[in-house]
Image (tube, rainbow, N blue to C red; front, side, top):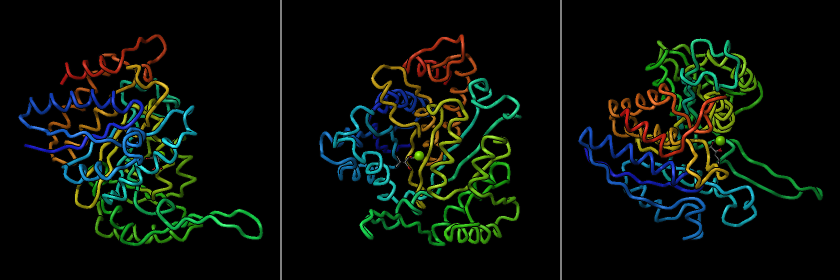
Length: 358
Ligand code: IPM
Ligand code: MG
């Protein structure tokens, strides 16, 4: 198989974890006889330095000409937040790319690796037989993309963000979630605030209409405040969780701490044509950038997700996932996933350990 991949490493730890993930991609290509053409482009602060914008047209064009996008991370250090370069960097880059390619569906898996139960911040008894949740978040609607206003009324500053959903936006992500639930445990939890919000009432209505085509999936509705509570009190109850854009942003971050480190998971943003962007959702971690300390696992698993979702290379994807699990099993730890008394290794050595087990 021959595929073109747009590589957008971005800022902070992005370039260093990306470099390692590409070693894994190369190794898998060699082993299974695929050739991947990698083309790099700038995004975030790195793009701003060169083009004065966070998501340049050249980057957009390269993505459009590719079969998939591998994304690192964007955003600046806290001490430089006042600089123009970093202002609205994440929003411009991420929302820009989501809008440009109509990425309406965001997959964020949250898994407590059996090898890493001890670094899950919850009590052992709450982890039960394991935590393995797939958040599916709508990514093109809601408060994020509705009309925004700022004005004065009676001498007071006022601001509004319109939350809007069309039934088509809801049904399209709902179908993806039902399909995913069918392939997993057959259970789907749809999160809303239907006791208060009109968008949520429509959300619930449409999700139940879609449910009629999936009689084998057990659908549960959950209010978002209750869901936040349940994620801490009983996360093992969840399998696939479907959410709107805003609720999904918050809940998926709450879920993302359960594995013990933000550096462990991959995420995928897809459009209706199956074109996708793959990234570790952990952020640019500028405090440890350039030191060779970052955990490359999230970025490596993003490669696995890309192979599986975009190219249908399931076996190749599994091969990477299993090499990562064996690496954790063998006790290799970067600083973020070190338990007390364990010693840590750097970004490159972690990748070496994965490559040895590939
Ligand atoms: C995320 C991020 C983005 C979002 C921000 C940086 C625009 O928090 O991907 O979850 O809110 O979607
Ligand atoms: Mg977020």
